[in-house]
Length: 141
Image (cartoon, rainbow, N blue to C red; front, side, top):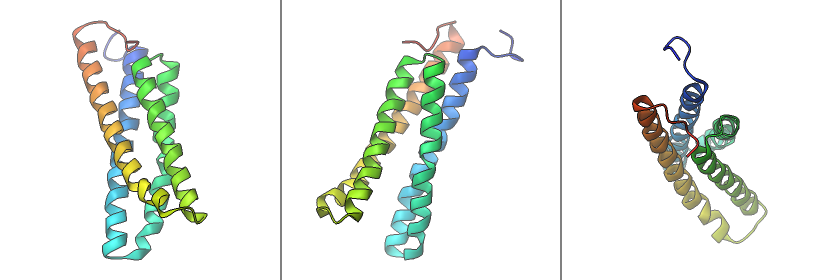
């Protein structure tokens, strides 16, 4: 297809890349806000929570688009990221319900794993887009 009307796979790739990029940025902001809330201004915990809830939007959107575009590799990554997000929310709820401090201590660890997963997905998308530019290969690997 022409540059004016990109192929559906290329459009899906761009949209998913934007969603995953937004996920990475929001997650980095999460870590920044947690650090600032811990060491400077406790009021920033509310911003940390809001950004955390907003994360479901780009993660969910990336998964839906990847499923519709049959981007299998991307769907696997996005599904794992959504699963880790559900665990992340569960860890917070368990901590609020008075569960063992171990559960609360796993929250930043799981957040770091999510960030690594999101960056890995973004790198995969970049590699797939580069491959697609050189050939007509689809994202169904």
